[in-house]
Structure formats: structure tokens, C-alpha cells
Length: 399
Picture 1 (cartoon, rainbow, N blue to C red):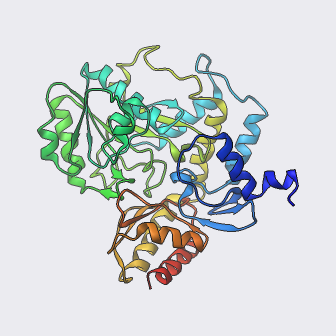
Picture 2 (cartoon, helix red, strand yellow):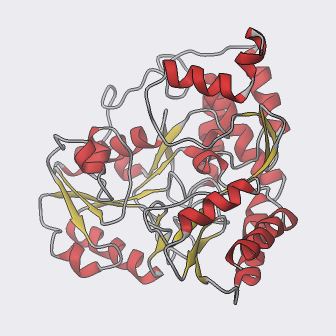
Picture 3 (cartoon, helix red, strand yellow):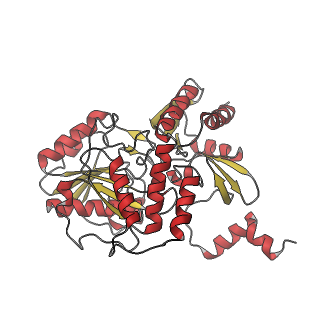
């Protein structure tokens, strides 16, 4: 019979305690990671898993990157937290570093706690700047679970979960500029989109679509908002999708970030330009924990680690390896996405079964709302050798 101490640390004991005391959230994987390094996690039972999902695209620098761990240790011993009512050296450094990574013209940062909070504040900024209320978002887009963000989400049943929805949200067809033109009247404050729709199956529009959106927003007095909660912080092989070749060089008025920004420490941000910043006054925006010292230390260390370790180039190199390795594999129809936000599309709706079969081989991947698309969101430090383990396992499963 297991002792009390063993029950608290073995998988069955951990799972039972969570089920007893925690409300249901996601359907969970049948293991409990207790430590990690790089692209690997180790479970309570001592099993090692190759993590190609990164905890919802969060662990960009890998699990427990030494630079991030040391920065958190040092800051925790100095000052855990004080709010935005004081100035902070660590907040100043994080803001300067983050703005320095952003496309030209992006000059100001607002720190919050999550992606959905960043999106809520981006929409608020747009309404303050324009004096208008409506926001155009897109089929397949996901922007979060808080009231305004879930009302801006037109994917699956999320809007049903979020009822009663916040008014003023209208939906255009992703990739169709004509559908945006039809909605873009003098009541619209902003057009907001995920430039790569991750949960919808890693859908990307051609560069011309983003360019046409920029022109339309400028012409009709609307702000353009890129929700880069998943695509930002190096995920696509550049610091942001904004300003990249894939975006046709387009820089939006507001960029929202979270997930990878703190390497696992909860933190979100809105980045914007001087024109939008000039419309924001004291007390227009606020957040108790946003910009806290521990989170700011994580932001700076994350950006430094990505830069120092050449992770942007690595993301593109591993993308190239995966595309080449999966080309012509029986059962694989296409590879979508950019950098290390990739969707492997199968000829048949088997993504769920493939995901499960990979998990049995100790490889963690993600699914999407498209039953044909398996998502890969690994740490940006993943190697081609590790990616090769995935390719070999996938070939075996599909065979």
C-alpha cells in the first residue's frame, strides 16, 4: 500500500487531488510533468517526453532556460512585486528591450497579465483613439475567454460559452478583404486578427491581405490590431509577424502579446505607436499585477535568451527541416504556418488519433478545431535531431 507521501507525488495521487479540488478546465494528458529542460519534460513517474507543444506555445526558450531561471532567482531575492504606482528599474529595462525588438514606429508598451487581457486593452485603446465602438474580427479567430475577447472570437462554441456577449462585435471572412470592406463603416474602431490563426488549423493569408487591411484601415480611420499572442516573441522566426515578409511588411497600430513573453511566468503586453499612445491618459488603463518585477525580469531574460542563443534563426532552420522531411510522406497533405507555429495537415481527419499515438510514443503535440490538422508549437530551441524523432514516429504511425 502506498504511503501518504508517495500518494502526493505519484501520478494517481496528483490526478486524484486535482480532480477533487480543482474545477474542470481542459481534457488533460495522462501524466504530470515535474521538471523540464530544453525541449523535454520529465513526469512524476520518471518518463521523459519530447515537448512539441510547449504548454500552449508558452515555453519559447525551452523549459528552465538557465538565463531565465537565474534572472527570476535574482529578482525574487531583491523585490517580488510593487504595482504601477511606482517607477521600476526592471520594468523600464523590460519595456525598453521589448520596444527595441518591435517594428519601426512601435514605441510604447503596456504590460498586463495574459493574452485575453492584452486583447481587451487593445480594443479599449482603439475605442478611445477613434471614439467609435464596433470591432471587426474574423471567422476562425480566437482572442481569449474574458468578456470582450470571447465576444470577438468567432470559432467553435466560444461565443456561446461567453453569453451574454459584449455588443459591437462583427465578423468578416479571414482572407477576404471584400468581407471587411462591407462592414467597415464610420462606427468601426478597429480590425483585429490573429495573423496566423492557430486554433483554426494554422491558417495564414497571403501578404496582400494584410497590406489591403492596412490601406483600408488608414482610409476609413480604423485601427489595425495584430493579436500576436501566439505568433509573437520569435515564434515565426522573426520577433513579430508584424513587419515581416509574410505580413507584406505591414505594421499594425497595436500588437498584443502573451504566452512566450515570460517563458512561463504569466505576462501580457500591448505594443503601440505614438498616435495611439497620445490618446491614452492616466487612469484610462490599469492592472494590479501587470508590470510586476518578477514578470518583468522574466520578459528581459526571455528576450535576451532568444537573442543570445540564435533562436530566431533556429526556428526557421527547424521549419525548413520539417517541411523537407514531411514532403511526400504518405498521408501528409500539407504543412501550414511559419517558423515553429506549424500545422501538419493530413489527407484524412485523423489528427486526434495521431496526437494520441504520438503521446503513446512520448511526444507531445497539439490538435486544432480542424480534425485534419496537428499543431506543433515547440520551444524555439528545439533541434533538428529532436524534430527528426517526431518525423520518424509520424511516419511509423501513418504507415
